Image (cartoon, rainbow, N blue to C red; front, side, top):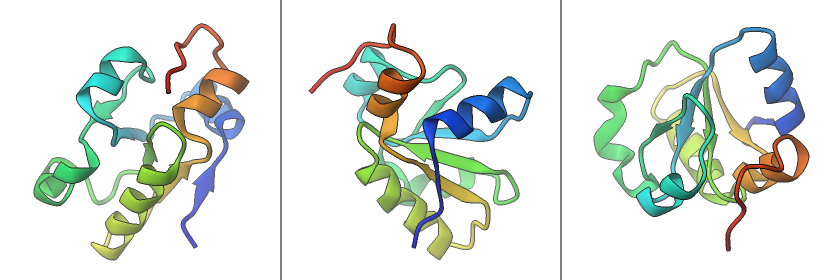
Length: 107
């Protein structure tokens, strides 16, 4: 099972000053529409070629639109030896609904 973090848990951690690496695995057009502050875009299809850009010792929170692609990304990273990886449950859509309603939602 892929470890997950809820939007509320992530918000609490960010508010406390924690700085996980926020990995956005959506497509560039999605990232341009709505993103979490401080996040880094590496689309899921480019993740295998981009492993060198990631710190294996950092805590990584992967997110996408609804949490499906980011669950795949988190699972892949775990298979590659990354040890502190979580999936943002419900993705950026859940973040918009539960944490920041000013963040645009899309289909």
